[in-house]
Figure 1 (tube, helix red, strand yellow):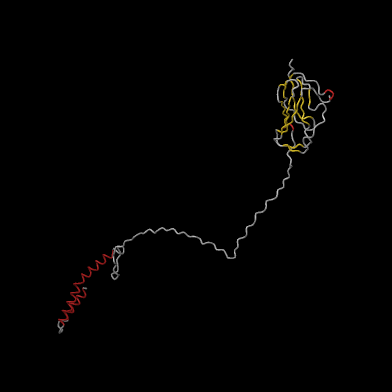
Figure 2 (cartoon, one colour; figure 1 turned 45 degrees about the vertical axis):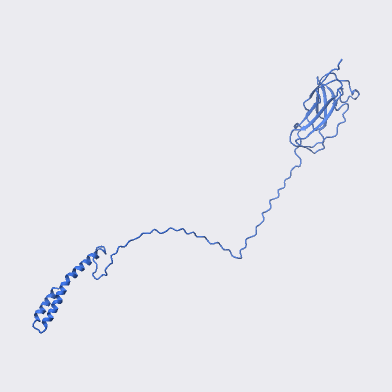
Length: 265
């Protein structure tokens, strides 16, 4: 700038003698003076721009020819992304048109189990049977018949009688001394029809009953000439019921006591 002023002054002084040069010099001097007057203003303006731009780039210097920056407030809005649930349904599996479901197979037949069992229950055990004897009264007058009932019963499980019969139902009467006075089998025993023909099944509730009558006379087997014997004397007697003889025996039951009274005088 100093050189330009010096040259201008030199030019003015050196050309003052030329015709019309004075006016030209004045024009040049005015232009130079105006230029000099605007230069400080331009420098100040450039300094202000540099000061403003120093904050835009973190304090670094900006090139004077750089494009001015529009310093506007920028508001950064932080948004939270919306939460969404997506359900994906798998498409149905398509089978070919030629696919045919197999026909249901019938269940295999269960194996045939053959069980061979004895159609009859086990053989009878005679100790499971009982004999029960009773009379219609406990005291009798002379020659009054004594009515006797004998019954057999199975008190155990069902069973099978494999032999024929269980012998004959038998009633005997003993006096107080234990001597035989009367027997249902006297005077001679010809036996009795077989009650069972084996094999015969007897149920658990099986029972059978018989009835007899004693006229108070004495009579024992094998004494046909003496039967009917004399009247049994007054006293105590025991009536006993049992199955007599044979291969199958029912135990004798508890005796039933009876009393024969004497004839009134």
